[in-house]
Length: 42
Image (cartoon, rainbow, N blue to C red):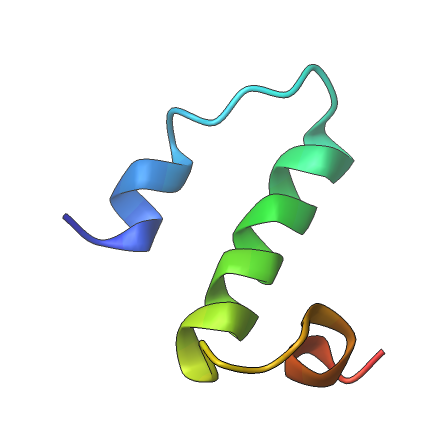
């Protein structure tokens, strides 16, 4: 299943949090061994 499909069911109670968790997953997917700040460049 693709992340885009999975992200449709994420409900954290705030749209900003929903978008942030998808962004985090995408960043970590591109560089799974990196620490979060390094993977997300912030």
